[in-house]
Each structure stands twice: as structure tokens, then as C-alpha cells.
Image (cartoon, rainbow over all chains, first blue to last red; front, side, top):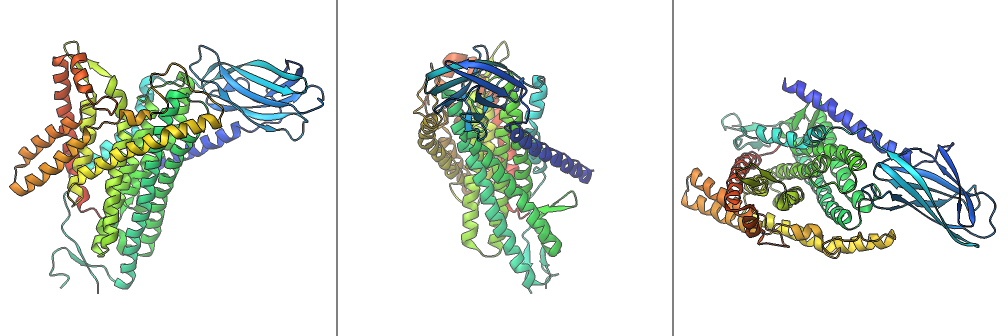
Length: 186
Length: 392
């Protein structure tokens, strides 16, 4: 019975470890830009007409949202960008600055990831600065999360370490000090 | 002669055994310290993260405080896994060492502590994405007492317990080999590990300090004394039984208070640095200043009194031959004293609680606290006694 329990624990442990590794892989994959954007938005950030490509629509709350920004027409001079994801007033979250890197294939283009931490309505705020001065545009985004589990289920899972440590502490109850053992070395 | 001596055993070829047993305690000492470092790193990361949540808000998933916490989880998990893999390989080569290990699922061998730390680190690793999911559902301002915060922090507190077991077994094996310095280092590690476990669990007590009373109509019970009583008695009593040194409880709480000092020195500058680096701003309308570490301000200082009294009374009980019942009663009362909420920011909070809850409810909270101290003492004595001769 005890050995069976150990085997079950081993299987559960391996599954949990694989789930963690899968989650890490999924989180990394979420930051990678796909080949085809899920949504393309044409906007004007002040004097700069831009094409903004979102690679996940709706966005996954709790994960990064990959995006790309490209000017609609060639611009003489350099454009600099500052992108943030801003939660709607009813969303309990704070603004997050996006990480950006130049798009090697598009002059004055950028690629980046915006973190959307909580489900609900967000805005992707893009501030541009260039030869024609500053410009800004806001793109609405919707973020969704997997269905909510009931509170009690959350607690049932969340208290697993407590069950584990309690079971362990109870097994220590019967353990008495072992008699002194002496190793005899020939 | 070997047969004539009770408990004496010959373990075969000493030339192969002696270095192997030495290798076992060196390995447990090394990986035990790495596991402990992981839990300590997690504690510092969590203290920083709490500051970040309060004053900036939970923004990106992989902000540096989270990275620090996850590094701690990964470090301790990998160390525990390595410990089991290494000992399993060794046992296959030298079966006589099996006596010093604990087998698992008929396939693995390792120290008991490595299994505990591995289980707990895996729990913490699973808790992190689940916590991100919980935040995605309910927002960034989830209380510390949220299911996956508890899973995360408690997991890493148990990692420190695993490190304690690894280091205790290393101390005993080193003692057997006559390695006095190694034994001393291992016991010091045990003290730091227990202080780390206490520190991680203290984070879970914050919510009970100012809130979370149970309303029973007639009386309202503040749950801080009962929870703190369990934790404090379990850790300090287990340590005094397990480590054959004087002032063990006092040493643990001194290190525990030193950790709060480290948090006070490290967290505010780290937060300012990160806010500037990421071009962020502090959230408006906060009651306190980001220049003060929120965790350090909430740190319970009354524990030092309890620790000193535990050491004094344990020694006195030994000298005077007190009955177990008398010692138990005194230890429970002493534990309760340190289990009153006395944070650095407001050490007289118990007085405020009397005013806030009323005398009857306060007394009820203390009585439930006594029960917690009793349970903690019971567990602590059993754990300490089992650790005293632990070699596996």
C-alpha cells in the first residue's frame, strides 16, 4: 500500500513537472511573432500613418501579446516609439511598458511584446516621435482568461503543500531516536 | 566482536565505504546549502515583490522580483533532484550505503530532506503559473491569502524544512566521521534554514495580523495567535530538540530578525532602481513610503522574547529535572507571548487589538492561540526528536 502510494506520488510528480515545463514553453512561445497577424490595424499616430499588427486577438491575459509596428509610407528620418498597455479604468491593473526591438526587415518598423496582466479591456498606446514631431494613438484590445475555477477548488489545490507537510509531520510522530550505531571499520 | 556489540555492524570493505560515506555527507552538506540558498533567495525576492505590488503594481510576469523568486525555486528544485539522482547512482554502485538513505518507489534513494525539498519546490513551481492565472482573473491586487500565493510561499518554506533535514543528516554523518568543522557548519546551516522557514511562513501571517478575524457572534477570534503559535512552536521547539547547542532558539530568531534588516536595506533601493530603470512611477495614494520596506515594517519583533525564554526554560528543565507536563505548560505560555502580533511598525498592536476586539474576544483569541502553541509544540517535539539521530 505504502509503495503503491509512492508510485502514485511519483507519477503525479512527473506529470506536474511536465506541466511546468509545458507552461514555460507556452510562455516563451507567446512572445514569438507568428507569420500571420491575427489582427491588422491601420491608424494615424499624429502625422504618422502606421500599420499595427497584433499576433493574438483577443489577447491572452497573463501572457505577452506580440505586435509589430510599421509606417504605411516610407519616412525620411528616424522614428522612435514608446508603447504601453493601459488597462481600462474598471480593470484592476496598472500600465505596463512594452518591450521593443527594431524590425530588421522594415525601415522604421518595430517589433515588441506587450504584457496584458488581467482580463478585460485594454489599450495599446503607441507614442511616436520623428521628423514631423510627436504623435500618439490608442488601439483597444480585449484580453481573455481561461474560465474561472471556483474559489474552493483554488484553495483545495493551493493547500497541497499543507497536506504534504502535515502528512510528513504526522509520520514523524512515531519516530523515536534510533540506538547509537557504530560503523566498524576493518 | 561485531556480533557481541549491540547496534554495531560491519559494513564490509572499509576502503570503499569510508570515502563513500564521506562523499554522502559532503554531498548533502553542499546541496543542502544550495537548497537553503534557494529558499533564502525566494524570501528576499518575495519581500521585494510585496513592495513592488504595493507601490508599483504587478505589471510584467517576469519582473526582477519574480525572477529572483523563480531562481530560488529552480535552484532548490534542481539541488534536491541532483541529490536524489547522485545518491541513487551511488547506491547502485555501493549497496552498503543504503542504510543511510531513504528509498522511494523502489527506484530512488536519497536523503529524506531532498525528497521534502523536491516535493516543495515542485509545488512552488506549479503555483507560479497558477498564480498568474489567478491574477489574470481577479486583478493585480490579490491579497497574500490567495490560494496560489499560499501554495507558492508555503512550498518554499517547506523547501527550507527539506534543507534542514539534509543538513541535519550531514551533521550526523560528519560527526560520525569525526569532521568537527563540517558538523559545526551543518548545524549552523540548520539554524539558518529554520530561520528561513520561519521568515517565509511569517509572510503568510501578515494578513492575519491586521485582518481575518473569525466572527462567532458571541466573540470574534483573531487568528494571528493561533497560526503564529503553530509556526513558532513547531520551528523553535524542533530546533531545540534537534540541535545539541545552547541558545538555539535565540540564534534562529536573531537570524530571523537579521533577515528583516537585510530586507530593510535591500528592498527600497532595489525598488527605486527598478522603477527608474523601467521608466515607471509609484502608484498614487499609498499610506506609506516606498523608501521603507513593507515586509520589514510588519516583522514581528516579540519573537525574540519567546526564543530567549524557550532557551532559558529548556535548560532549566534539564538541570532541575522538570516534569514534561510542567515544561510543556511553560513552553506553551512562552510561545503565546511571542505569538501576539507585535510588528516593528506598531509593537503595541496587541493593546490596540484589545480595544478593537473587546476583552472577551481578545481572551478568546489568546485561548485559541494556546491551542495553536500546543499543536505546534507537539509537532515540534516529534520533529526535533526524529531529527536528533537522523542520518538518512
